[in-house]
Image 1 (cartoon, rainbow, N blue to C red):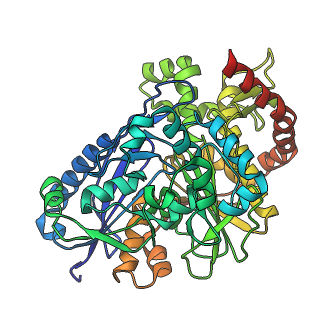
Image 2 (cartoon, rainbow, N blue to C red):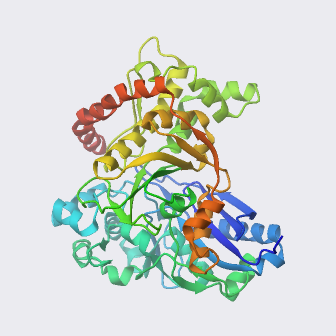
Image 3 (tube, rainbow, N blue to C red):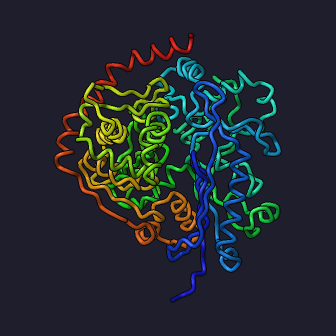
Length: 518
């Protein structure tokens, strides 16, 4: 067997975990490590993370990887790519020191600032500039909130970074921004691919001064410094590319390689991808972005705000009985919930769950949507509650997929990676909800850092043909087919899921305004 000469390091800074791998050119994962990330909720609609913790976790992870792999492999790491959750607002000073905790995409405190920006520019003009629907998840409103409410810290701000940008800075000493995340900030003018002066003027910020110039995803932005090498155990001088969002890395990790395939990275949130041969209009609730996969010039990239997070919320807030039972019988709580959900019939006895616990991104794009159970009755069983949560997140996935299809894409199968792929019950529900087979990725090959490694490997010539490399490395663990009885039930119930929310939309918006004033 030929000796493996080339290795890649891929890392993803996710919302709940930072994880990384060392991947050989033969597709073997020779080392892997992860550390949990903590959330802070300092007030209503606020969610933050500590950037210094990102780096301390990264150092521990790199140290673990290099110890596992050994010096002989570490010296053959050819490149590093880091992806991250997005969009994040992290202000740093001229030395790269964080000035406050990072505000994550799930932070909704700047809704007032968002409405001011959109009202000032005009909805249609705003959409035309940024190429997407305005939402509180993005950057202009967060920067404006920061400028208004923390002016002393804003005055010290040299740059706003994304999570991956911060890790890249600690590795290379360079402040950068990849073009993938730049297009997601809603600060970029998609017609010029430069920071929008019009948006900057409205928020009173010179975006060219406060945001790094966007770099191509696979552009080498720097090299591991002597200091970073000593800290992490990596070799000095290893190239570091700009990287990308976890969404783009996830797309590569699912092994999508041709039109007609869709992908879902199912974690705390869900990232949904559908390839397209046509560019979508910017005024629809899901839009295309350029795609690097051969034969797939465009990709619909639609994030769902809470999927795994909804299940975790249910366990923490409403499943004390199930948690106690699982503990008493030495069962994994997730395994037990998978079994319990199957005791309920498809449709959960008419009980609907709307997983809008943090508002919703695609295809609603509003911060005022709220999580709801609708259809409770005296005859409701605990198993109905559990199944409704699984089904509610699957209804949300179908809502995205139907919207994407209406915009011009086609999908005949769904490839799933991430933590949600480990739930066979959930995958079976999704297969039946979408009436298409679900390809469950192998635990290792479907992980987001694999996508990072593929991207940097392609850049450095380790994987000359990206599609062939993905087909070789990304393995399918199981193909789950729809259950005909479930398909029929979901086809009848899905219209109610969409229409019931439509009927409540105005009231939910009014309710949030009222509650905010109490």
